[in-house]
Structures are given as structure tokens and as C-alpha cells.
Image 1 (cartoon, one colour):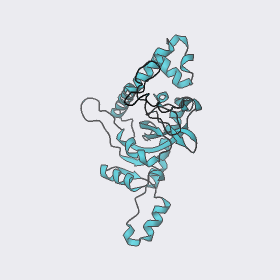
Image 2 (image 1 turned 135 degrees about the horizontal axis):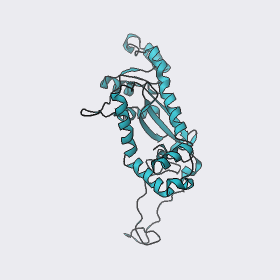
Image 3 (image 1 turned 45 degrees about the vertical axis):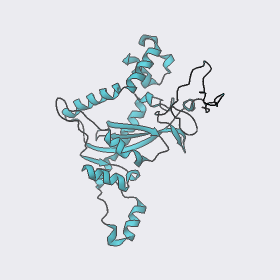
Image 4 (image 1 turned 30 degrees about the vertical axis):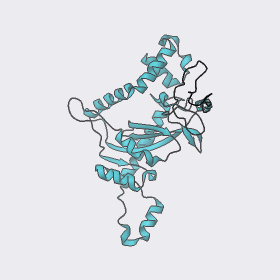
Length: 263
């Protein structure tokens, strides 16, 4: 079962084309979808992270970034039309079998993708955006997938909140990194205030317009935010983690455009 799931994720083969040695393709597919929905895969990842943490293998100087993945045009799905008006006042709309239709999850503007699949419209077309935090050894700690039309900074807190490495034995999970590096996309007041509130040391370059506005205010503009050049040089660890993830996730999500392909 798991071998079949891994084969599909690694090769990008269609579910229906899974080799017969893995069993019925539909069984493998449904088990994968179930484990993705109920948190089984996420729980397995946390157990691996816990073992790595107790062995001292996690570098808690983390970095945060995002990448855009273009969805296959098949991910757009069928066009959805509003339900037809009731035949008479007070009557409920029914489907062709005389049953009240179930309410469907909302789709992104422009069609395509059930709600929660992380699909949206951007300059690149129908796309998803992967927000990722990675440790200093290029290994993912948390992942958030949304429609690509939203700015990076809007998911900054969500990515950090999802960092949760359990302790082996007793104790609360570790949720706080030693330090964080991020690019200018996260250089705003709410992001910096959130990091200060949690006591997380951070290195984020100041935007040019923010710097100019601060200088125009003179002494009232305050001091510039701290910036560690050497620490910022290591921000590439999250970019390398993203590259590894895309390679291991095979042509999906570009082929399917759904977050289920990421496990």
C-alpha cells in the first residue's frame, strides 16, 4: 500500500496506471486521500522530526520562503452554475433524482478546485503557492499551501505556528526556533512584531521604501532593524528544501494541481 503511494508520488504516474503489484489502484488512492485528510502523513513526519531532534540533527536556525507551482489545466475542474430556481415559492431545488443536492465547497474565482485544495489565480495562471519553513540542514519543518494570489507575508504566522516537533517521552512539543531568516517579502510591521512577541531572533532585510520613509523622519524614524549578514547568507537552506520537495513530489502538483499530491 505505502509502496504504491510512494511509487505514484515519485514517478507522477496516473493513479489508474499504478502497476498491479501494488494492488487495486483505487484502494491505494483512497487510502492516500484518507491519510492526507486525517493527519496520518503529518503525524508520521512529526515522529521522524522528534527522533531527529533528540539526536541533535535538527538545526533550529530556520528560514522561511515560498514558491509558486502552476497547476495542470485539468485542475480547473468543471464549470459550476448556480442552482436553478425552485419551481414554486417555498419549494427546495432538487437534483435529477428528486433529492436535495448537497452544498458544494466554494471554488476559487474563475473556477477550478474544491475549497481547501490550495488553488487560485495569479499572473502565472491557475497556481498554488507553497509556504515552507526549513531547518539549517534544508529539511522542511512546516508547510502551508494556498492559492498563489495571496502575498507571502499573509501566511508568515501560519507557517511558524505549524512548527511542532514532539518530544520523545514527556514534555511539550518544540515550537520555537533559535533564529529565523527571511527575504524582503516578510519585511513589514506585523511580521516583525510577531517575532518580537515570541522572542525569536530574526534577520530580515529592510525594504527600500521603508528605509527611505524612516530616514525622512529623522530621529523620529527610530533605529534600523538589526541585520546579520552572515546569518542571511544561510537563507538559501529553505530554497534548497523547496527544490528537493518539488523534485520528490514528481510532476504533481503541476500535473494535478491538488495538495493531495504532496501527501
